[in-house]
Image 1 (cartoon, helix red, strand yellow):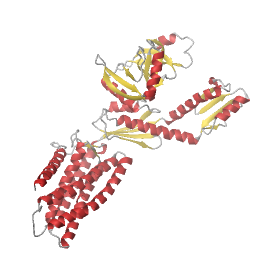
Image 2 (cartoon, one colour):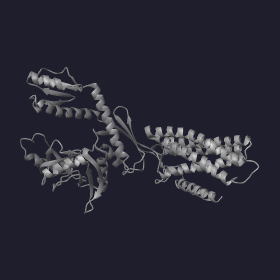
Image 3 (cartoon, helix red, strand yellow):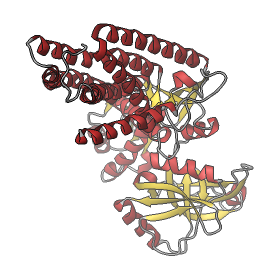
Image 4 (cartoon, one colour):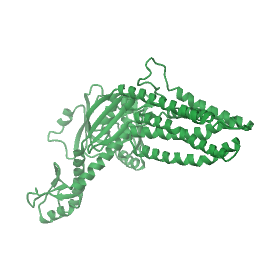
Length: 528
């Protein structure tokens, strides 16, 4: 009995801990069925229960095809230069790649360069002009690749652990749209919109010239800008007024593709800045660029807008800093965008609506009612059919529910409408393990064993059966969690935790009750 005491004490402490976590979710309000039914720092409610933001985001797939044509154009310019085809003779016209050729040899080289990616267009006017278009197969490949990248980037931005937007839904809808659902009360709508719409294309370019305004800068070049250069501006974020104009090369010296990390920080004057770190390859390239341009200005450009243009004082390798006229929140947003990576193409919010909590309140009320009714019926059945042992099963079921909610609260899991269904299902399945154990004990009693021996044999021989039945269900729940999205994951989370707590309550808690009574006592019969 001395060894039993500390086991029972430890078990009681675990049960009380999770009971405390479970009860701590409920708040005392006049109307308890509201979107704040649970505290924010415990069990969270999903979009379908507490409301939130619902967006359908359109992806500019045509821009991705245009980028592919421009990328191929640049590659073909280098390839065809050896055949005497000038760079200016290779251009993009809409959805076609156009080649101006002067000799049959050049024409043959262009035709050989098409490969399996392009199809020759019938619109080729003569031997001096050859037009290519992307094949249907390659166009579809670009579409799928672009959608996959957009989905991944948006998921990283919305579900970034430092933004505090857990369990948001970002999933594909149709061929060129993305569904985004963010539970309400967890993020500012304007901030979420900026996280979505910012392309996040970061470039570092050496400044060739600088002026206070675009007009002043253009005035220095009456014949137009030099080839392969462009004008970019820096704006005051509060007034949106241009404060400086820069002349830079069209192509970036290095891009944000080499970034390893970015985060909000503060300089010595307590101004918000963004510290960034390149990967080893990016650090090597950045070191070469800064070493070769000491004393020059380096423009840090995000989506064609200059954030800052510091003077290079020396060689910089893996770490750097972006300064600018932005608030701490804007710097934090920029860090999130940079960490998540750039979007392959722009996106636009095509549909926006707010999901109210009214339906969620009704769902919570109905879910609680269903759970209570199911629980009551199971308790009545267990105690009526198994008598004293049924009381143990009923206590185990109550502990099971308490631990389920407590564990979900501990890990700040999100409860969705399907999650409530999983909770109701767990209540129905929870007594199943006890039924297996009790029927095995009854069988042992019918064979003439004493109550103590029957209890021991019943638990020992039923353990593998209970584990087998629940492990297979757990595997199914884990598969649903891995491949499901949003509400399906909510159901899988609740079901997975419910299976674990059901097994614990049946094999550990209920057995502990039998160890307390009858325990080592010799009783004439067992109430089962």
